[in-house]
Amino acid sequence: MNVRKSVDNLKLAAGDYNAARDYKALTPIQLETVYQSANTARMDALNKIVRHASNMKTLGMDDDKVVSVLKDVGLSSKDILGVMTGSLEPLSREKKITASDVYSEIAALPEKEQMRAITKYASTDPTMYKSLMEKRKEELNLKVRGVSTMDRLVMSLGIDDGERARYINRTSENMSPAEKTIYLNSLRQKRILTPKVETQLMVYR
Image (cartoon, rainbow, N blue to C red; front, side, top):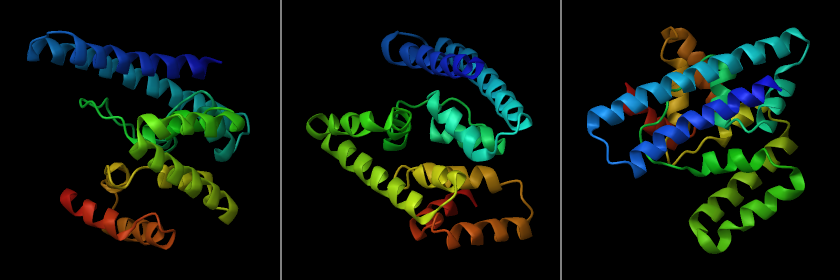
């Protein structure tokens, strides 16, 4: 499937930059050149995935099905949200692997393999293991409550690492004051916009 190739290219772009940053003795100017090239490749891949998603909808797939396809090919929750809302995020310059990133990878595995993948962190990274278990528990609870696929994606974004606040800010920054108020109130009612996330949003004002 072409969308899988685009996801692979997206990951390859990030890998190229991360390897240059972490393992090569580059000057700041050289590293910036690598970053710009990798980010261009990332955004090209994301825009292709946006077109794939649009084509899937044209073929009659609803949002839930499109999200399911994107999950199955290994696209992260954060990038799925960007593709579905048109709010694409540039390549991160920092070396930071969050529980949200790891859980997105695990969620793309077959159901029977997911717990096995999470359990591997129990001895090597207990903090990550705890976060992954909390995310899995939350995901299962949300499914039982009938929360929509898109809302579950937003809820899968981390709070402590600021991912959820960054997403909400990015998607609302071009809204009118009235639209933004309606949007934020909706997120509060769904318990997506928690008090801690609201506090984090204050830095963007």
